[in-house]
Every structure is written in C-alpha cells, then in structure tokens.
Image 1: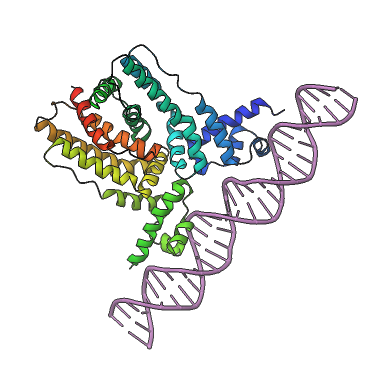
Image 2: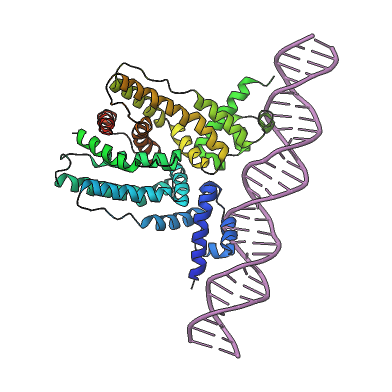
Length: 187
Length: 187
DNA sequence: CCACGACGTAACGGTTGCGTTCCGCCGTTC
DNA sequence: GAACGGCGGAACGCAACCGTTACGTCGTGG
C-alpha cells in the first residue's frame, strides 16, 4: 500500500543527504524536506535513522561487482580495477563509503552491515581471482588471496577515497604489472 | 594568562571526543563536560568548533614521522611499516583519521589541513625512501615515489583503518618482499 | 458512491547544542 | 591588600531535530 514512488524519492534523498552531510549529521527532517515528503511517510517505513540507512545502503551495496573471468590474470585484474576505480570515482560512492566506514568503527550494526555488503564479497572476488590464476599456472600455488585484495584495493581506495588524488594516466596498467610481480614474489 | 593545564585538558578531551563520536557529532558542550571545564574556557581560546579541531589536530599530526635512513631499502621499509602500522593500530588514531578524512571531502578547510599535515609529509618520506634506494642501486632509476607510497600505505590503511582486520603474523615482512618486487617490476 | 489508507502539513513537548552574558571565586602580581 | 583576569557555573534566546499525534486531502478498490 506504501506508494513506491515515494519510497524511491526517500531512498534517493537518503543517499544524497548521506553524501552531503554524512551519517552523523543526517536528520530525518532533512531527508523528508529533500524528498518532498512528510516525516510521517518515513516513519511509516522505518523506525529510526539507523534502521533506515542500513536498509537503504545495504540494498544499494548489495548490487555486487560481478566476478571477473576473462581467461587471463591480467585481463581479470584490468577488468576488476576498472570497475572498482570507476565506482570509487562516483561522487556519491566516494563520499558515502569512507563516511560509513568511519561510522562503522563506532556502531557495530553499521560495521556488520558493511562487512556483509562489502568485505565478504571482496574476499570471494579475491579467492576466485587468485584461484583462477593459480590453476592457470600464472601464479604460484599458495598465493594469499587476502594479500592480493589488499594490494589491489588498498592503493585504489587510498588514492580515490582518502587522498582524493586523481589517477594519473596509465596508473591502472602500472598497478597490474606491479601487483602481478608482487604476488609472484610472495612465494 | 590562559592556564596551560586547562588547555591540555581541553585538547585531550577534544581528541577523545573526536574518537568517540566523530567530528560531525562533536559538540563544544560535550568537550567542556569531558574536560571538566566551563564552555567559557573553550570560547576564550577558539572561536568555534572547526577552528578548535583544526588547531588541535594539526598540532598533533604535525609531530611527524621521522624519515627513515637505516642504510638499506629493506631496513627503511621495515622501520616505516612498523611506525605507521603501530600508529594506525592506536585506537584514537584509527578512529579519528578515517573520520576526518571523510569529513574532509565535505569541508575544504579540513581537507587543506589534513593535506598539509599528512599528505605532504608522506610525499617527502616517499621521495626520500625511493631516492635513497635508487642511489644505492637497490631500485631502478625512475621508480615512482607516489606509486611506492600508495603500495605501502594503501594496504596498511585499508586493513587497519578501514577493514579493521588485524595484521596476520608476518604480514609486514611479506609486504616488504612484495613491495620491493613490485617496484623493481614497475620499470 | 463510499470507505479506506497513505499522503502532506502542522503542531506538540522535550532534548540538545549554539554562542553569549553575568556572576562570584580565587590565585597571581604589584 | 587591592586590582586584575582566568576560572566554573548558570542562565539566556535561538535554532534544529526528535518521535508522535491530529487533521484534512486525495486516489483507489469495492
């Protein structure tokens, strides 16, 4: 019975507001104003701010990155880096993710939700990526998928979401070369 | 004339409060309560919340990491990783830094301050580290210091401040091997 | 055509924080 | 011993937001 267009407007408003002021300063009233909606419409759907944000964010984040399988490790890497870097360069994502990550260190519920939505999926991607490369003989067996994920996502996240420095041309290509060499050396 | 013990109490309270609730929810009144101090004592020192936080944080962050120079690239790396990982595992730092980083994406003043306090210094460290290694012949000339910093700090920051996963034993040693191989391969 | 229910608006009392002001206390300085 | 000034405490008016409620409107289904 709840009107879907209203729900959509609220969801969009929450994401926008989250990007603009962050979770800490997000208020239900501001969301309602931005969505052009009464507070009642919001409280009819969720009980409070935390519940609302968690539901909306985990829904958006749940649309997960497809597992790459291009036939070569370099190809997989290139695809993955492209997808992730593109996502992290989107204004909303690059504002919301660090904010919620910081918030997660104080709020176990947020932490758990993000863990579920992001970290778990990353591990799966890492294991598949490395597993494929090992079985193709491109990487030595025993290569650590966690380390690989750190080496790939760490620098990207650092640059794009933290330092907010643009990626120089050829950066991703260099990353591919460099990470491949690194993983081979890891024994 | 301002009493230094009061000033110290306020500074400590700001850092603690910043770690506990984040910049967005930090209130002058809470700082005063925690410091056991009147609001007047705070307003006598700073004009508002932003000014106060910026001054205090940039002061703390200004006590910068010493530039490593142990005689070998591996030694320099080990020292640097030790220092940084130790710092990022401190509760207060690992709460405050991501929070302010996220806040920086919305507040140019915070961004500028952090840039000055952290990024600039990191670049200096990176250039010195790589410069030394190159002149020793341990790395090929033309090695990119920025890439090196990304490869070192990105994964560490990712694990410690974002994912909040503990460092497995031997992680740092593996990082050293891996990053060295990576930089040699970068051409 | 009527009942239902989601909707927006407005108001509620209560809480929190802002930045400011005034007060009385007390240690320092001269 | 008197003047000065930083101190804590209390209160100010103002604003924002909380979560809830009452009300009138409007579209849809029966």
